[in-house]
Length: 74
Image (cartoon, rainbow, N blue to C red; front, side, top):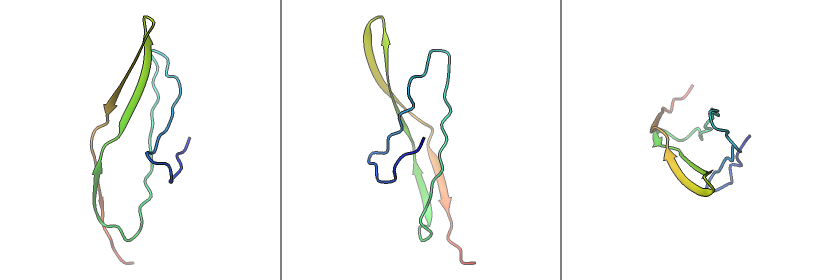
């Protein structure tokens, strides 16, 4: 699965996750070479489910990430 770099907000639909199962999601960031400093943020997972005939929705946040980008000439 991939997300277009032009998609805003960037959304990845992971499909149905059955009770008792899990899906691991990882990602790779591509940074412009002239960018230096610290990038920080978190990810939001939005979900919907049905329980006893009622549809419910919610969201949860990942842990915060911090990426230090150092610029160096070779």
